[in-house]
Length: 325
Image (cartoon, one colour):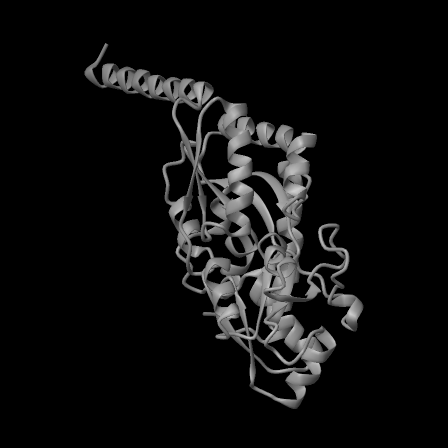
């Protein structure tokens, strides 16, 4: 056998060995703790949902699940970190509209490619609540719009980041109501709610799970729900749509993804585990207490959601006149 032939055989054998080792590793996965990156602050809706899922997922997979918060830049910081992580299944991302859709439309120099992620499973969605301070001279959406028209430029609204559903909900309301509101982005509820309570901003579209405690104590007023239907968690809060703005329907959703190149066996294992978890009555009841609604968990549903969300969001951005960063 010639030297070149021997080298070819050795390289082929080595390659098969590496492939076999990789297959074995993915089959035996997980062998150590799993990290889920949350691209928003601790205490945010994304954080709370991820921690609830993490506990159940850890039990299902037989390994602990650690949640790491990397907020900032409308989820781009945490999403970039996840996209650049080693694709071995030990780093996952709890994604949402900003991570997977809006950032690509809003940020020409985005530091990651949303399409590079391997979709695992959808988990849930939550409505947003339009909050205002009791110190404001209005108690209803109708009164707010009237005040805004009589006092152009005096009202502002907070969001949990440029390009998030919180931001786009405010821009859509501005467009449909014909009012002038200043957008003030924050990293999440942990910053936005104190700003609202302190009078730095007039209003805030917050997720229902972090909004309701403030409403129930009377610290803040709830003017409207952002989804097309009222929430079972707050049936007395009317929707924006029913108060004169038909078609107003924006809700953040939450879906687990992995860096591109993660072994298919790992993706399928996590996807199956999540689908089992979200069908569990106790888990559904636990999420329902926070206002979250379970979504179809399979990967096909995730693909369909993204496909429908992209053109809808692009049209909303263009209609609302939101400028790319």
